[in-house]
Image 1 (tube, rainbow, N blue to C red):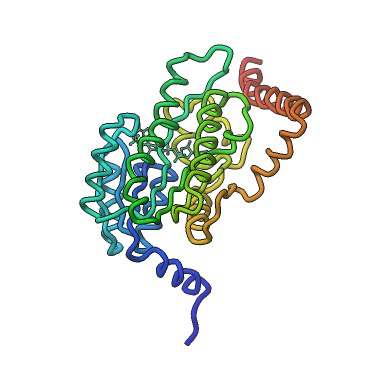
Image 2 (image 1 turned 120 degrees about the vertical axis):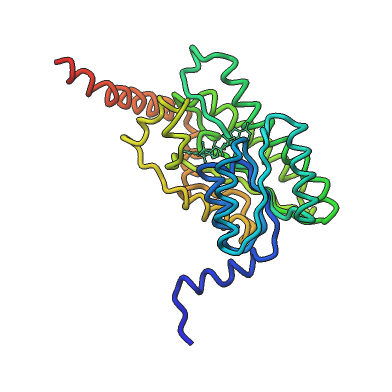
Length: 288
Ligand SMILES: NC(=O)c1ccc[n+]([C@@H]2O[C@H](COP(=O)([O-])OP(=O)(O)OC[C@H]3O[C@@H](n4cnc5c(N)ncnc54)[C@H](OP(=O)(O)O)[C@@H]3O)[C@@H](O)[C@H]2O)c1
C-alpha cells in the first residue's frame, strides 16, 4: 500500500496527539489560534483561552468540525482569579491537562526614552504575570500526574533588546528567565518545559492596534508564516526539545552577538537608522 509523504508525517503526529488534553492561551488570534487549530485537528482535546469569546467560539466550532473536542474559556490572563477559575473549569471538563501552550501576549512598541511606565506595566501584567498565573494554576495537577508539557512562546526580542521593542523585550527577557528557572526546578519531574523563540511572524500583533510603529516591519523584514511557529511547538512537544528558534538557529546568532555587545549595538544602531530612513523616505518624496 502506498502512502503520501503527508500521510507518513500525519500518522505519527495523530498517534502522539490523539487523546491528549491541551490548554492554549491567546487562542483567539495569531500563533495561539493556529497551534490550537492544528493540534486540535490532530486529535488533542483543547481548552481555548483569551478575552474575546467570539473568535474562540468560531475556532472551537472549526475544531469540532474536524471531529475534535474544544471548550471556550473567556479569560483575562492578567487577572489571577480568572485564570484559576478557567483552569479549574478545564480540569473538570477535560479530566486533566497534558499540554499548556502559553501564547497570550501583547506588544506596545515605543522608545525606552519616552515610554509610559503604564505601557510597560501592562505588558508585564500579560506577558509575564499572566503566563505565571497560568503555569501556577496548572502545575499542581501536572505534579500529581508526574507528567505534562508547558510550552512558553518567548521571542527573539527576549535575547536581545532593540528599538522600538525595548519594553516588550524586557517582558520577554523576564519570560525567558522564568522559563529557564522553571525548567531546572522541574528537572526530572516528568514535566517538560519548552521555550519557543520566534522572530517576526505574520500575525495581527504586527498589523493592528498598538502595533502601528511595527507595521512597517513587514515592508522591510520577512514576516514568517504563523505555521512555522506551530511546527516549532509540535517539534518541542514530540521531540521534547527545550528551546526552538524560529527560524532555526536565530537565537544562537543572538547568543554569539552577546559576546560582542559593543559591535552588536553599533550594527543595530546602524540598522535602526537605516530603517527610520526607509520609513521616512516616502514622506520626503511626497513633499517634494
Ligand atoms: N507576531 C510576532 O512577530 C511574534 C514574534 C515573537 C513572539 N511573539 C509572541 O507570540 C505570542 C502570540 O502573539 P501573536 O503574534 O499570535 O499575537 P496576536 O495575534 O496579537 O495574539 C495575541 C493573543 O493574546 C491574547 N491576549 C492578549 N492579552 C490577553 C489577556 N490579557 N488575557 C488573555 N489573552 C490575551 C489575545 O486574545 P484577546 O485579545 O482575545 O484577549 C490574542 O489571542 C505572544 O506572546 C507574542 O509576544 C509574536
